[in-house]
Structure formats: structure tokens, C-alpha cells
Image (cartoon, rainbow, N blue to C red; front, side, top):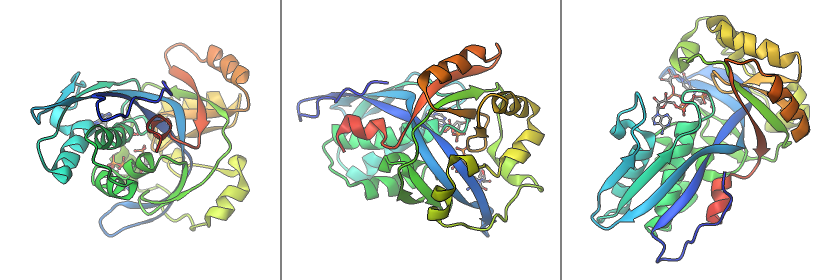
Length: 293
Ligand SMILES: C[C@@](CO)(OP(=O)(O)O)[C@H](O)COP(=O)(O)OP(=O)(O)OC[C@H]1O[C@@H](n2ccc(N)nc2=O)[C@H](O)[C@@H]1O
Ligand SMILES: Nc1ncnc2c1ncn2[C@@H]1O[C@H](COP(=O)(O)OP(=O)(O)O)[C@@H](O)[C@H]1O
């Protein structure tokens, strides 16, 4: 992923920006709201890999997105929905050509769609010279998904509520090996499972951080293991080699390693048939580094 600082002078009409992945380093489910949504406590951290958006100004006020993503209508694509929201907020005839280089697996618990939306919001704000603050962009983003605000704010965070109440934190920044076990996890099916743990007592952020990575867990894991045996196999395989966890509702699982060579060695051992990659944990989003925000 490029860290290059794009040209933000008013004459620049193209921006190339990262949309990083996230991991949930801890995920507790502390309750269920009357509308059925679950109250969470989670630690979000970014990875140095992700999708890439190229944004080019159009003078005719039109919004265009390429290429089409399999299974997602263009108008449902979170990039397009973010662009339309911002266009409405900004008023006027502001248009853009957007190219989405999709590398993150969809519905993998890596937050790719939410990150794409956040990059569209911040990128178009810069391209169109709107100067909106991050609070405003996060509020717009929350309408698209609970995970969008953390990508808008761009700092690793302790999150509560449905993930929108954020406190910036600095976590350890190890290397990770992430495995996608090739199954599609249904987030509603996980949150709808009768046996899902929904009553973890809330803890303070200080206590979560004090416990450290060795004490962190994901309350969705037992349910996802039961519903998706292939995820359980990937978790068991990883856990025999390094501390391993599920991110979000899966399907991706990750192992934590101290050094890049350790990550390389583990990556080389991953059985064929599972997609896998290594990545470095980041407390600051590469999007914000690229935009200088
Ligand atoms: C649990 C997390 C942690 O990062 O996992 P991933 O999606 O990244 O795996 C997210 O908060 C996911 O948030 P979000 O991405 O907005 O979830 P959606 O796909 O919109 O949710 C699909 C369905 O899951 C249930 N849902 C989701 C989030 C939540 N806090 N409580 C819920 O009960 C609801 O039934 C909702 O209709
Ligand atoms: N640009 C996008 N990238 C990925 N998914 C998208 C996008 N736009 C809409 N979606 C929809 O959002 C869903 C969740 O995607 P994603 O954010 O990748 O997963 P997760 O929430 O598990 O981390 C996808 O299954 C897809 O239907």
C-alpha cells in the first residue's frame, strides 16, 4: 500500500488513496438493544494492507464507479453510497470518477467495505475542497455502517455502543498472519444465534489495555466455530503455532507474531486452499498519513 503523499494543491484533479483493513483485537458483546443490535466493546486496529481508491474530479457533476463488484449493485456499493451522501451534504454540482481496486475479501471481518466508504468520504472532501471536519464525516459514515467512523477518525480505538463511541488508543503493533478459510460468514446469523454470549460484563478501557493481547478474546468465536467448521480448523491450525483469534464475525482469523521473519515463516506453512497474507498492525491509518490529516 502506498504511503505517498498525494498532491493536494487545488489544481490536482486525481487522488490515489488507501482503504486499510482493520482487525478486532478484542470483541466483547455486552448486551442487546431493543432494536436487536448488539452492544459491543471492541479494540480496532488498522493493517498496512487494503483496497485502493483512485478519485478523479469530473466537472459535469456525475458520479461514476468502476469496476463493478460481483454481487453488489453499483448503487449499493458503499463507495457510491458514501459519495452520494457527501455530494448531498456539499451541495452544488461536484462529480467524480472513482476506481476501486478491491483486494480485501468481502464479508471477511476486515472491514473493507466500511474502509472504502471512509476513504471515499475523506478523499472526496479533499478533492472537492470541502474542508469538512472528521466529526461531520464520521456522522455521515455512521449512517453507512457501524465500522465506518473508526476509519474516518483514523486512529486505533477502543469502541463501545455498536462501535461508534470511540476513544483513541495505542496498541502493540505486531505482525499478523491473516487466513481467509474460504467460507462466507453471515453476520446476521452469528448475531442471531441463540447461544451467542451477549452478557459479558462491561469492562473499562484501562482494564482491557492492562490485560494485554494475551487476555483478549472475541465473543463471536464459539458461535462462528460451531456454524463454520472450516473457520474452527483455521483457528486451531494457527493456534498451534501462535496466539490466534477471529476478527469481527469472521471469516478471517489472525495470528500475532513479534517479527516479520516469523510472519514469513508461518505464511509459508499455510496449507494450500486457504488464502493468507501477512500484514503489520498500525495505530494510525495510512489514509490519514497519505492525506496529512
Ligand atoms: C461485529 C463487527 C465488528 O467490527 O464485525 P464485522 O462486520 O467487521 O465482521 C461489526 O461491528 C459489524 O457491524 P456492521 O458491519 O455494521 O454489521 P452489518 O453487516 O450491518 O450487520 C448485519 C446484522 O448483524 C447484526 N448486528 C450487527 C452489528 C451489531 N453491533 N449488532 C448486531 O446485531 C444485525 O442483525 C445487523 O442487521
Ligand atoms: N465497496 C465494498 N466493499 C466490500 N463490501 C461491500 C462494498 N460495498 C458494499 N459491500 C457489502 O458489504 C458487505 C460487508 O463487507 P465488508 O466490509 O467487506 O465485510 P465485513 O463487514 O465482514 O468486514 C459485503 O458482503 C457487501 O455485500
